[in-house]
Image (cartoon, rainbow, N blue to C red; front, side):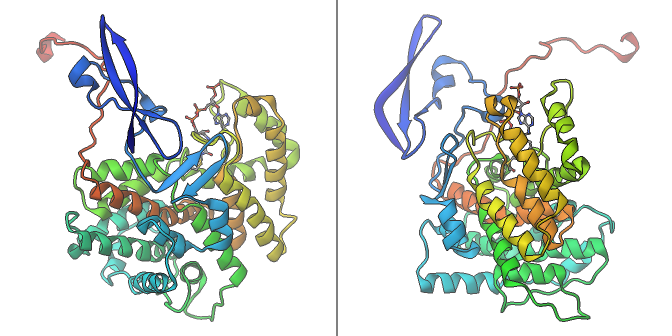
Length: 431
Ligand code: CMC
């Protein structure tokens, strides 16, 4: 972050205030308003943070107009086609692509932490059998702070590193256990000779009674889904993790907070909501009715999997996933899947409709991920847990960056108060 010679002048009540301007390595300049209240006695107002940079970061950059997503400078399409999830995890966590030895060491560390404490199995049994796997995930990840006491001290860099590896390694195990519990099947232990994505498929789909062989094309598609969701700069769940950890809360509690935020349908819950919407539409002849509803201001219905706060041209993750969807459905022999037909037709209709063109609403990552996951055999309730397990590395990388930053202070937004002013208490019999 470089403070330039440039500054902005604010005129207020006959006084002028100079606001320094920071120039980023990419993206728009940023006005520094940190001293504004102390000097001018006013707050800024920006609900939804549409114009506010909440931190500085070196991890991920998005150019919403170009439809560009870079991790540590590398474009997501190159990472999705040439790299794999654990290598991207290393890149996000440590800032550079690993050497052969560094990657091997990292993969070994992650692999050696894939099992969860055996007592955690009992913890699962406290949930109702029909609990949504996201509810289970929030609870069990939060409960990790009750099991891993030796990695709770956030002031110790070594403990932070152990917590990071534990979370990345155990999230697939916990997500798979949540799924198995919800369908009444026994938990499946991780298999360390499988790669990260294949091991997750194994824990979800194998049963003790039969041999299960992971199809390499499906594990590659799963790895790609994980890679595409790994980080997305200061989105709602990442900002939640940062805000939670700004108080010094332990990493497991902070990631549980991030998972809770991700669950909402405007964020990670959109992949489940999108597939449910496609099923509800059911056939291409009903598309015009749903497009009309999405445009109707008096109808709360929105096209799920469409629109994005930052991307106003294309979501580069959706472009890669669209191709993956074709490959996976082709492999599974379901290329004439009616959902895919509805999705493709819906996409074309919306992209040619003046409402969606004017508002710059394009398919986002959630539009195609659900179709792939469903074809693989996942129920819709598992879509958001899979998003959560892939995003864990992004949350952890941002968390580590924040804690190591000497400027780190507790997050404490101000408000525009519109309530009653001072008034006297009225005794209950006089109200
Ligand atoms: N369908 C119909 N209209 C829409 C949609 C949509 N999906 N998205 C936005 N609009 C309209 C909205 O009604 C508003 O119209 P107007 O200006 O007339 O009031 C305008 O477009 C701007 O919308 P906004 O809600 O102010 O934009 P936002 O940046 O606050 O919201 C969003 C972004 C992603 C929450 C929103 O586009 C949305 O709800 N999309 C559907 C849910 C979804 O797919 N979410 C996944 C996001 S990507 C993955 C992730 O982040 O987890």
